[in-house]
Image (cartoon, rainbow, N blue to C red; front, top):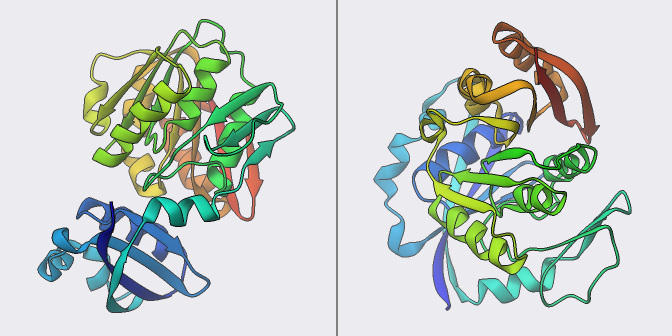
Length: 278
């Protein structure tokens, strides 16, 4: 269905971490998709959901440490799925895992994931998702219980199940991510995935062998103690959504809750870090 969208075009100084924080805050007030630019950010929200006064809830816009300017545009109705389909190209990770849409030709790989992301994050094209796929590929998951936190499309939970995990919970705060994960789990015949809409408050009383969280630095710093409490002994925690310069801040919080640093991957300044519960 064609929908009229409002586009906010932001010019940011510095671009990072401003863009990362701004996306997180805008998502909280209903913005559905984002395009990171060299000097800023594009953010989109359905016109029917946009209220200019809601921007007052975005605290970053009032922070004097950042220079943020924006313009507002109305985008004529278009078939956003067709736009996405024209842009989305299949990817292959380490010649082991292929991520494609259902309209692409099959790809021979150890694990073939079929993803229809719509407005959700997580096709493997972003550096963080790509690295998390690499991490998951290297894990022994047979019979493991897995949590995919900030699941987006559910692509990481799907790979975990295809690698032999017995169950995977997939949680995202955004309703379209929750719905998209359900669709993609069905598309990949992953009945052992249970999707939930919400945040870390849903984790009370839960236990996992592996926790995957690809979100952003501020959310991770807040929620790492919760992840640690839900992780079984010798369990694995994979974290991404932040830059190499942020690793020490992440390590500091992890160390305080008995999570030991194991290794990390780096791709265009983004990192994905592996910790083990001691």
